[in-house]
Length: 416
Ligand code: GLU
Image (cartoon, rainbow, N blue to C red; front, side, top):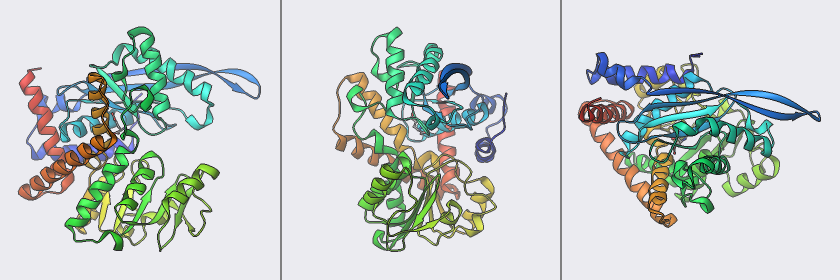
């Protein structure tokens, strides 16, 4: 089954443009675009329904796109919309992302089509471990290293580590994004959001924006969105709007993030947060702001709403939040877009640091992790912007061209 999905549409266009400009065609292009291996896994789990045991089967996937530059690397997503097409597109994006920030990994992605919040902890553990049993032959410290993504977290990584270790011995480096007590890295949890905020700050300064005068709207309040919000506030920005799957909240004078976090912990959503007025997710995207951070799912800014997006900077914390038609419209209007493969690369960068710490069995301080992360992201941003200026293209095209060239070069060197 190969369901077309919004990710494939979005990435397909950006990739075609970059490949054409790089004059990469024929088998060389095919090799760069095709998956190394695509694994589909049926996961049976017995769930309790109205006091009865009912057998369910879930579809799981692991797509290993390319490992020319190092072991496959990428997250595991638990979400009802997970399918092979989406996983394939996201696996490719990981290849370009790891190449762009120049870490010795390739790209992969996996997931299970499931609504994890509808299972209890025991059922989630069972599902994860059964999935891992079937995935075990293709993952490994030097083969393929999963990490969290939407719907998964350090606990899920701990279950994978446990299951994998039953047959392979204790191998902390087989997953990243683990709990710190099991070899996870200090700073990994906040790394993606922290990197997003760091790049937003860098680009805002380039445009002479004063953080205190800059209004920020963040769509998505999961791990990435919430940590981006915390880091943005620490950098002096004013968050005027936040949203989660249930809807959003707005306050012109700024939303206190600690209160928002406490409210979500207590009530399960942002709705009803004191001192804010309700807005919809669609309204959040159309607020007049200096910076917009889409941190939810793919394809949220489309040709249907791009004309109403009134910001100067978009930092793509989510993977593929802007469709290619919307991208064109926004670029024409001079909106600066920090593309996903750069903007949210802090996650996989911290994963790399975690893996290095696991190999060395030598943990680093949180400050060391975040300092190295910010330095590497900043340097990568400089390189991308320089290339964009030189070739008179936007940052996304420059990032893709740089990443694709590095992977192509590694393939040529290795000769396969
Ligand atoms: N899921 C994250 C991403 O899309 C992190 C992947 C990783 O750390 O391997 O970049």
